[in-house]
Length: 515
Image (cartoon, rainbow, N blue to C red; front, side):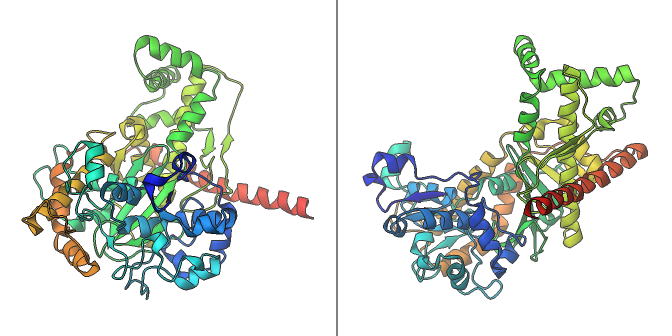
């Protein structure tokens, strides 16, 4: 989230350097607790619980800790909207940013009239943002403009931004998406290598495709034609990408970050890293070598990469070292490990690495189960990006633990960039088709009514651009090894028991200390 004074060019250095609150900043825990105690309908569209990582808890924290005059003069942007603002000078907001992170319910959804909910903001102590909500982007159709994905913003690049970027003024700029949703755009329309490469897909097909956008954390996004309320899973978000479609977003707060922590705190990591540098390979290659050697030494059958899980059959990890985002929405949960010994070798490091991948995959199943139980019908998980999207062991673990097909991306680190490029292509196409005067200073979309009609008109075009721009990927089928299925089902039951056990232990400790 960015907090920007009215004039960027007049910012003093300290303000310029300290005008951002990062996504993973957890300072607003008390504010999130207050918001969640209100039981307002806003919470129905974030899975029942608003995360302390979202914008409203952070804005409330600023309200409580900033001088009133400074707060009253600020403008609040989610990062994608700040980038389009800096590029164009337009204060138009993306529907994605507002609905997914700012407690905004689009007009016409659940009785919402202006998008912002005055009674909700009054109750949590942010009534001062009304009645016009200029600091949040305004009211659509009045002094505000809210755009769906791919719609051109303002008149394109401003003279100042064009000069800074070395591009032409009025170059079309697309309404932005949150990074995970750009990853969804760059992934959801992909086809499978050697299977359906010539088959045309439609927007309807997206509702069975769960896209996993992985990195430090992981987001799980799925689109539906009707809003599906999933307890503990964010959304359903109306018009988040496509007009009149809904997206649910599950998530794990720490995945790539957790893998790094497990590896880097192990006694054998330093020597393993040193050897990887000497051999000009990755640490993960050496760990996989170790797992293969351990399987051979144990004379265990390798029927698929997920068979390595036999090496950690008596070890268990619960992976919420940084709290649970989905499907429990419980930031108090922490990681758990069972089955440890005193081994400090690389072999042990490899097993801990494998155990971490297994735990993340088990939690993926937990999220998928809750989504399907609530009305989704996930058939395939599409990996979108990050190191996990290159990891064959992890991909097979997810396929076998979830019992679903997994599609790997052709370029594991490009999906968010590809999705963003598709949005830029869409904005350029809309601009060219709607105006012969590409360099006109008149915004292509100047009213909310025009913006919504244009988005609906071009929805099919956006999907076609996604399909044409996304390369086919490798499709992984679940194993038919019955014993592995039984092992993973048992481990999943133990995984769920860890949640109950941890909560019970916490309650017992609290009752003693409070008594």
